[in-house]
Length: 185
Image (cartoon, rainbow, N blue to C red; front, side):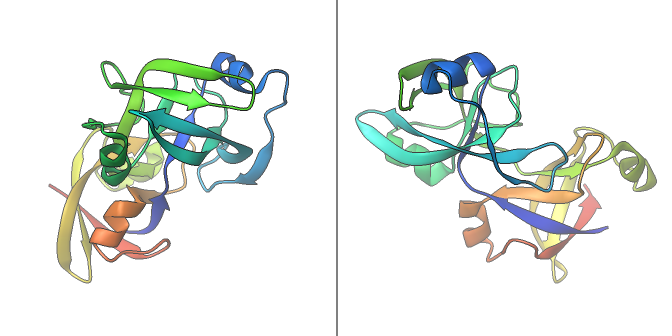
């Protein structure tokens, strides 16, 4: 199966409660919609800090979630002095804490900083048609060269796409929109 590549930069998913602490009474606004249905980059950014190091203007991605998650690259984590955990999105239990700095407050989240594991987004019908299911391991290739493995994330609705971070894109010489090949492990 051939699908497009989505390259992800560091970003944050927040609960409504933490957002309100950081931004007081400000409304959560859309800057632009993303390819995944219902998801958007907000107009808001926050700084994240640890060990007296700061990554500035990290974009908040909506809509609100029921957990706080900060997705960074390995390079970002190293800069902050953090040994990152590589996790599936949403699997934040016992991940690293981080301080979020907004215009109205600083908030320490007790867990939530991760390096997101490579994954494809796919809807249930397309997954079924391609003999894939949630959590399956897959190989990713380009120009018939096997690059790395990833996992399957089945969500309805979905825009079918592989997600990797910008550091991985650099490492494998891939760009946003490149067409890659998916095959089962």
